[in-house]
Image 1: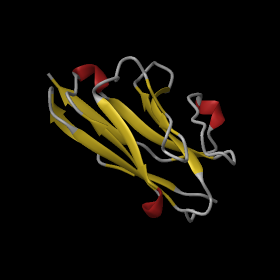
Image 2: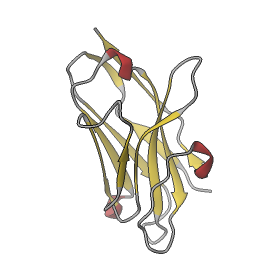
Image 3: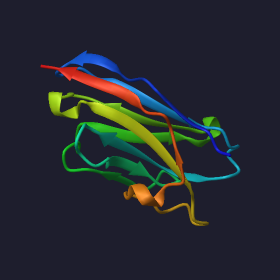
Image 4: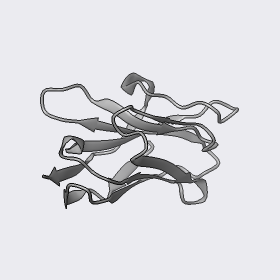
Length: 128
């Protein structure tokens, strides 16, 4: 069973930055595409960013483009979400998800149903 663990959430002021980290337990010989999802009460869990196993291809939701940056370090089995210029509407529980990559390592996924492994979530609160 693959374990996924997030860290880095917290309480910040509007305009501040946070970096979330996500580590998977499987050795890097098994490649994963990864995604970051955000959930707020009463709403569906939505993908805010995703990255292919190779790291060459990325996705950002319109609401976070130019403010968030996803990256990964496969040697450390870790993906990151750098969140800058945070807004109160970025508040939510952030979940990291992983799914076995295709052989090319070129694809990312943005539907929650595409992912097999999920972390427990980390809370981000942005105060105005």
